[in-house]
Amino acid sequence: MCHPARVILCRSVPCHSYYLSSGPNSRDWLPGVGAGRTAGFGVIAHAGGLVAECNGSDPVIGPGRSKGVVMRHGVVRLISWRTRWRIYEYVRNSLWIVPFLCVALAVAAGLALPTVDEHTKTTIGIAFGSDAARGVLGAIAGGMITFTGFVFSILLLAVQFGSSQFSPRMLRRFLRDPSTKTALGIFMATFIYALTVLRVVGTGSNNAFVPNNSVSVALILLLVSMLMFLRLITRTTQGLRVAAVVGELGRDARRVVDRVYPDPAAGGDDEEADSPGLPGPMRTVTYNGRPGIVQSVDSRNLAERARGAGAVIELVPRFGDLIAEGSALFRVRGDGRHVIDDKWLRGTVATGDERTMRQDPAFAFRLLADISARALSPGVNDPTTSTQALDQIELLLRQVGGRHLTPGVGRDASGLVRFRYRAPSWEDFLSLAIDETRHYGEGSVQVMRRLRALLDDLRESVPEFRRPPVDAELALLDSAATRVFSDRSDQLAAAASDRQGLGATEVAGHPPPWPAAASGRPGG
Image (cartoon, rainbow, N blue to C red):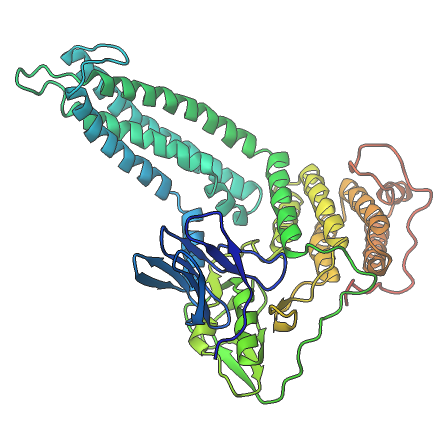
């Protein structure tokens, strides 16, 4: 029996492409449901045990395994969602792939261009003698390998400085920079190309063959390498500025929030959507594999597969949790007529050695809070960096506070909740963003003033039903100011609201009152 699924057809390629969708805005080619496009064969991957294919004309829907399917000339390859995710992350985080491709192109060009020179008399650049060509290519090859080692050493020092200055969890972001990968690739390609062309200089019937065009290309590559070096130095030095680091992190985080929480806040607390009440026992699926951090989940395919099986699936760990072998991974409740394979369920969860922001907006708050807290450590003692991190935290809190925070659900094509996971609440986001900075910065007037400005402005910008947790944070801030500062003038200064921390000489009209009773933590 074929289960229903929504198939959306795109006619912009020779072979029609499809993707399966659980809602009007849920499209995710990678690493969600994947699509293959070839001339004459198409593919797609499926949900709920269905496979959508095309043979160049009409779609065909049939039962199949929930795997990515790539069809080329009749050969079908099955790639699980977890494998696609791992490939995607490996390519993004690997420093060697782009340089390797550049070196491969350099070898191919170094072999092909001298052959072209043998069959043409046109010279596009400078005409060289045999000895001059050897000297130029030898100098380029020797100089570039030394230069590449020098640049690589500089990059390692810059990365070490950045990770120690901001947060060790920022290291992956530095290594992902495409400018670094491209620059190293061009440097190594120039060295390899010069060596490859050098081998044919002075060969031929009269030992006088000089591939002038190939030597000119080597000079062009040398010029490009110098330009890339200047760009890399500019990018590295500018990219290590506090404002640049927290600004880029904030922009990435806001894009994640837009994707995960696209809807505006409703008129009340975020309520869980109803899922079908299902009879039958609940079974637990355990994790089988190396310990790792839960990074991403194929929620769309889980929802559609649960629909096909008449079940509801719950993810036990949260995004960012460490999960060990034998730990509970899923709880599945269904009518018992269809059983979802445990191996397939495990293949929908991607784990790794570190959190990512793709489905985990809370990780962005974690990074910004780390930068702020590290700046307030006794060894650094840089409250201005903390206030710059708070600037981005405020922007992110204002955005999250104005969105409908879904309670962690995945819906099938009919809109029913078929998949559940634990997602952060508004109180969780607020506590993660504020508490550590308030704790470590309670002795800094600058940080206290910036925190008060953040909370005052946030209280005015969020909906009414989200203000009580903000009020609780303000009460904790008042308590800290009264407890830490014994001098009245310091209390008045710390109780003032200042978006720059110490950008003005304003003081509060009165010191914050000492709370009659200990204020509860937000969300407690």
